[in-house]
Amino acid sequence: MHYEPNLVHPQLFLDDIGIADSTRVARVWHSPRKYPDPVLMAEHPWERWCPVTYGTVLRRDDRFHIWYCVWTRDHQPRACYAVSEDGVEWHKPELGICEFQGSTANNIILDSLSPGGLVDDIAVIEDPDDTEWPLKALFWDGAWPKTNEPGIHLARSADGIHWDRSAGVVLPKWGDRFNATPCKVNGKYILLGRVPPEVLAEAAPSRFDRGRVVWRTESDNLIDWSPPELVLTTDLEDPVHRQVYSATAFSYGDLLLGGMERMWLSPDKLDTEIIWSRDLGHTWQRSRTRPSFIPWGAEGSWDDTWINLPTNGPIVCDDRLWFYYSGRSGAHQARYPHNHGGIGLATLRLDGFASLQAQEAWGHVLTQPLLWPAAELHVNLDPRRNLEAHQTHATGELVVAVRDETNQPLEGFDWSDCVPLVANTIDQRVEWKGTKALRSLAGRRLRLEFRLRDCHLYSFHAKD
Image (tube, rainbow, N blue to C red; front, side):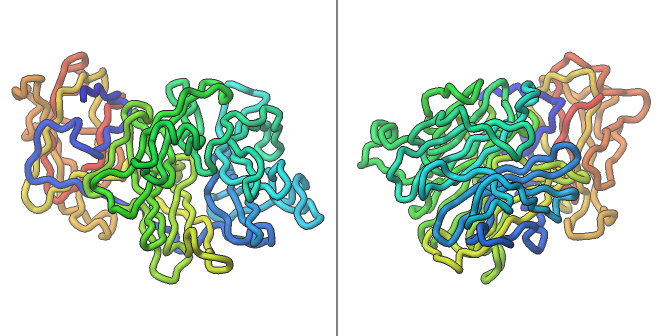
């Protein structure tokens, strides 16, 4: 696959597509560090079983906003809203919009239009081009049991609290587990979900039944959608009792990243794996080792059975990536009150999904030729042998050599000319001795050769 990266964005080491050669380095996958307690739990009767991130978290106007789904004991999901100043302590305002048990003193924003129905999934989308209705929402509405025609509805809002539903159903008969990108990606809204039964029957005859899978559709106006395309299924590397329950998608640099929800049928559990795409979600890549992104909690904890991500990507806060997630102590067959859980928070280093690590011996990584812009090279590195050590306890280093497209050295840009990088930093400019500057080679195809010892290299990018 030919891939021309946009070097202004961080170049992650999720796979080998940009690497020409390497020695004595290994790819290491990293999980976010979980905040020990849920940041949002059920407090009111309309929130039982538990709040889940079948929804969206956005940071707007210097505040955190969350739209989430809840289940009551009679299994009637609804969509709720909460707000936070710091992202940890959340306030659930009494909105006076939807009635529950004879009162509107609650934070419910969307209830089913069908008697006995349910709102099960909400994807809130920012639309900065629409100043009157800057927020849109796609949500699933149907009845339980399914006596009406369910589907994905469209609503719009000026404040994220009061929603106009006049657009109605835009994807009739689509299934109840879907996610949409929280903003346009290359001019398109992208939705990943479950197609109507007749589409599935035509595309996948019963003798090739894959169980739950993920389909992709796109739109430029949230009303007219492209024909669905099957984009995620299990493969021969997956256990036989696994299905793809759902998937999220969000922009990260020049990639589309996502969380693939892995449904384990035996035992009955669900977790999430990081996936990525370089063609706007038509083709998804997975790691060879396929680790769980956010691990389950210890047995008996609130998140020991089910973990999934919201529709949005991570929120950058204090130079960290903040991931909100659903944690539950039960899966599909767990009945009230055992399906207990809440919404948690986990944080990760910027660009910290995977690193290339060299240990005590020097490792080398040579890139494919890169069309270099008028900018300098910046790297994200951690020269600590033990990532649990004190932040300043660095014992390793990294140097960089620059070579031409044919892999010949360039004068003044050898390893011996590079000022060693020995500090733990997310954004460090690489410098060479003398007056050499990488921007002087703008417009040329160059190869970067990283030389590292006792060090994790997370990403690199070009920066003025």
